[in-house]
Length: 247
Ligand code: 6PG
Image (cartoon, rainbow, N blue to C red; front, side):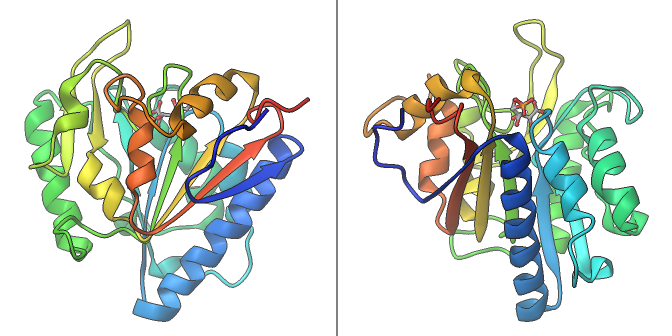
């Protein structure tokens, strides 16, 4: 049961389908508004299982000029773009191909590069080239889609790893740990600077980490998703009843 004061807007749906529906409508609105305001929408996508249904619905949202949308990633795993663990692969199948987003507007994170630090720097340069800086100096994306792990991670900011403390880079290499492959991730300054953040959480396994994120005090090193509380733009949590500990 939700017992905390949730930072930002909380939208609770009955189930995963309801979350996907709310999420795609909200993402669509944010994208349309950004294009209306500045002529372009720069969005960054998370991977994992949860957002796929929302991406598939987003591809069908009406009134989005997809040729004005640039797609970046929040994080990526060190696997080939065809690998089933690739965040790019799933976004391509659910959103990019169905919406027919042009290849030169799709910026996969090259986390399968041999030199991951160099790849992080290149991706940072790419972000800076396409996305103007916000007030606090980081590229200001129009939309960042996030998830939350059972261990309290978000993006590829994992508990116990120093990536969470990086403030002088916008993209970072994440070493292999806990049987997970190395990764690339956006860093905290970029996530905080976004105009809009949407966090998706579906299923009862997300209830405990959400409670820790929403608790008034806590340690970002233990529950990195707590950094989302500091997003300066709009913040919405789209969860199902099970993730909210209800029913
Ligand atoms: C990744 C993600 C990650 C994800 C959470 C939730 O590449 O692993 O971007 O941060 O959002 O792990 O994943 P699920 O949606 O699969 O639960």
